[in-house]
Image 1 (cartoon, rainbow, N blue to C red):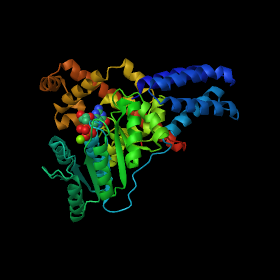
Image 2: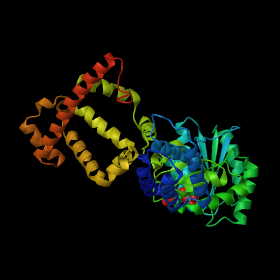
Image 3: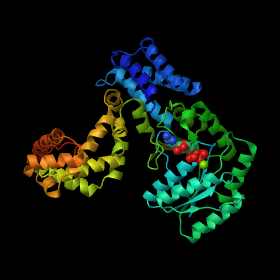
Image 4: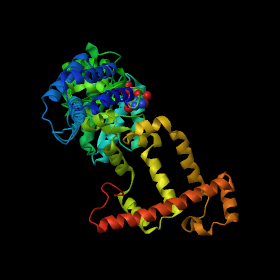
Length: 446
Ligand SMILES: Nc1nc2c(ncn2[C@@H]2O[C@H](COP(=O)(O)OP(=O)(O)O)[C@@H](O)[C@H]2O)c(=O)[nH]1
Ligand SMILES: [Mg+2]
């Protein structure tokens, strides 16, 4: 995500970090680099200019904190300004009535239908019971698309095929939501290639009828500045409550994300980061800034992990690891849990320095390796997984045949596993020791 911008900013920081004393002249070059990086990322030029001004002012006017290197202080100032630019804090959804209503608006292909499904999934996970409403009356295919998403998610979709009166659909959908006790309506509306008067009129009428709590503008991040122009228009016409930036997983350069708040004064509330329904997250300016500055995004990863991994399970596993009772069966479990987190590439990408690792490591190969391990362990009997000691040559040959690999590969997996077990035992002891010392390892193995 925003790799080019990220790389350029980190480059600019290289010179800053070493600075012993701040003066207008010795930060000028670095700030110029930062400005160029922002412009290259398609950040609105006024936004970039003001950004640099603020950073400069704060850098020169800053109190010298003795313990922190001056150059590092500037990096911190840039980080904070970046957070500010992205919107300060995560802006959640606000509902004032029941059932609540969300109007999803935006241009054709921006990701309205997909995001409607993603948002419904998220809200359902948080305990709401959404009703998706197919309010794109121009393209029957759009209704089918929404119906399919609803089916996948097990969330009802309100569809009136053939009905062309969007207001009628809306009225009926609201009645249906009440009848079925659904507490949030999500309206997937029609888009156009460009914002035009008929579209605006239809959306205004729909808005006035539905009185939505949220009007979320769905924007394709890859379109950069254009997304900001679109947002300005939609905001003027409809007074949106926020936006959803989609396709941040693609080659988006960051311009849309970084200019949106400053230009429209409306927060980015969610981000689409892939085609799958779970590739969706609340937009957190702080985390996004850290990601852009190459500080990784541990919190997102942890949240993602918490969603995918059963906590009780994790605790039980930790206990086993510490006591050295971790078996191949548990290992298989872990391999499968990891798959739930998503691709290895994605996981590593979210870690600090992860984007660097990705440049030099073939994650595809790693992933294949894990799959092969899984296959090998699967070819073992339950008893073998629990007591690998019984794995004699004969058994190993059988397992190799069963999983379509060579005996050498089976041996290699078993060796790796045994090394891992040794390490875990040691680690368990270490943890105990630290525990006795009253310390513990913060953030590890929780
Ligand atoms: N990679 C990626 N693709 C997305 C994302 N959101 C939507 N898409 C894709 O963009 C295309 C258009 O999405 P759709 O929801 O039909 O757009 P709509 O016309 O606004 O309803 C589809 O192929 C989606 O799979 C995203 O966050 N990342
Ligand atoms: Mg659509």
